[in-house]
View (cartoon, helix red, strand yellow):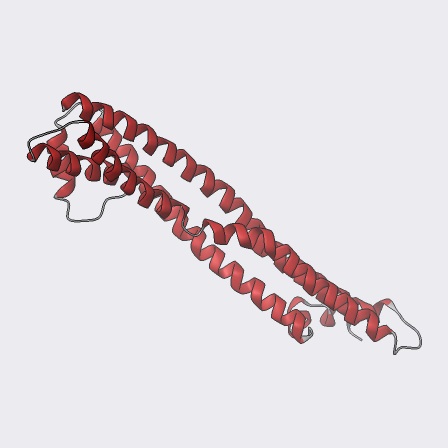
Amino acid sequence: MNIGSDLSFFSLVFGASIPVQFVMLILLFASIVSWKYIYLKIKILKETEDNTDEFEKFFWAGGDLKKLYEGLDSRGKSMVGMAEIFRSGYKEYFAQKESGTFDKKSVESVKRAMRAAYNREVDTLDRHLPFLASVGSVSPYIGLFGTVWGIMNAFIGLANVAQASLSQVAPGIAEALIATAIGLFAAIPAVIAYNRFAAKADRLSVRFESFMEEFINIMDRKG
């Protein structure tokens, strides 16, 4: 038996038992989807963070809020992050002012409009994170199932052999350990990405919350 050939990665994968191959396929699919979501989250979080930084710079420069609102509203594209929260709040504020009164009920109306926009933005930031968390926590156990199955088959095969040797049991054990390796390959990037993205999303949501409080105070004084 040519051990080097028999224990090559692809020969072990394609020569594995059906249940172990099925486990590997599940883990490979989970890994591909995870990397897709990781790419999307990097893009969304960077866009939100950059837009929020840019908006804060203009907002706290002390310019006319109405002009800022009109400038944002005339862009002709959907806004993200703090700019969208501001747009929703100022739009409601302007509607209340147009009605001729701006009292405590009007302030509450502005708060509700901003809270609704805030919830949408936070939902966008948190989207796909549960999937990454699930892949990170479940993939090692799925891989472990493939490992247990492969080792079980390897030892069952030894029952039909009069004299066991390492060369006979090595392919089955190696096949089993590949399932564990693929499980870790799927889990580790998902866990790292989840922790990093969750921390960034939390920081942005805190910034949104602080801005909402400051904006409500400004509107209350203007009212």
